[in-house]
Image (tube, rainbow, N blue to C red):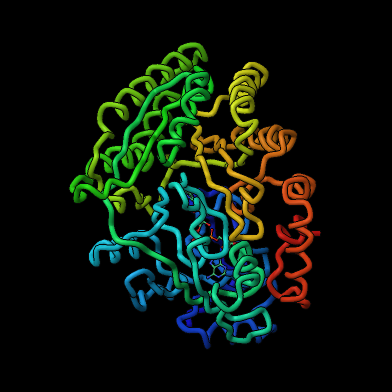
Length: 453
Ligand SMILES: Cc1cc2nc3c(=O)[nH]c(=O)nc-3n(C[C@H](O)[C@H](O)[C@H](O)COP(=O)(O)OP(=O)(O)OC[C@H]3O[C@@H](n4cnc5c(N)ncnc54)[C@H](O)[C@@H]3O)c2cc1C
């Protein structure tokens, strides 16, 4: 295995910098056993890393060991309704391999660069189809892992359902996953439509969208109090033929959205001119999505985006909180007012549209953000910077006061009180089970130590 010492590593978006004592790149389960058992060569905390696309600081402490899983990336085998892969395989690569066999994932996230190991044990999001889940881990049926004390284990949904529930929220605290088996299904054409709505109309139409069986995702434009709703539905009547509709949308997120918004920022010094330019940019964006990204026969795989390895300035950053369906539309109204008031007070406005997902109730993972019922999320987005980070601290308070639930890997700057309030007894259960699994705290870093204490 490759071993590097005293290196500096940044997360994909550059928000977090790590200075691990050792970065190990294992190629086998035996390498993982060696890493977890040799406490001198591989100092604690030992933290697995996938593609490091999490927006929160989840990949370890300075002076510890980072385990880069990306070299263990083989696709091992397919059945009619599962695929088994090594943990470092990325979502887009596996999705493309499934496509060749007439199969697809149940959840097609926007991001494709992330690893299956992380997807199996950390929170994820996508709008849910009727009877389905928004979290990828809910479809994971088995994992093989090396425990914190260096033992090989297999955990399956059939034989260990309770443990599986823990593993799906374990964030690399209960062992390093090296193999993942996940349910897949036959490829089905996907119909997609976009509608531009006022917040009031979104409130009115949402129950209708749900009753008609659509998966509902939305872009939020808080400064003009509008949403652009994306409705998706399986269309088994026709074969899939269209990729391009998704390619256009994906180009916006990969590059043109951030690039255009940064150009507007650079070219305007007057805040009123900038607000007008933003208004025009986002109006055109809404029109383009309504008119262009509509089809009854898209390839589901084409939704997944391959973000550039080095995003430079044109990067897309976000945070996420989910809210129970019952009070959501009042909170959405308040969110728009919060953004407007925040800009008035500080001059800062988020320079990309916020997004959100309607997510079904999900009790497959212990720290699920839709444990108590279906949720809808509000995910502010931006190209980053210190003012964005400041905004997120205030946004976390806003959400916490409204009993939102965060994602421990996708909601940066969380405090212990916020996490406790959101997960209450489930957090205590998780903390107790983690202690049992890792009494020597071999895998516990300061981020999780603080949140779980
Ligand atoms: C531009 C962008 C777009 C995004 N879009 C989406 C989206 O559409 N949907 C969505 O759900 N998320 C999205 N994300 C968030 C991302 O999917 C999650 O944060 C995901 O967890 C990152 O996976 P990763 O492979 O980068 O893992 P990392 O960020 O490296 O790790 C995540 C967690 O998993 C643990 N871990 C990693 N590998 C293993 C392993 N083998 N064994 C045990 N533990 C492990 C780590 O220790 C850490 O706690 C997006 C992120 C970005 C930057």
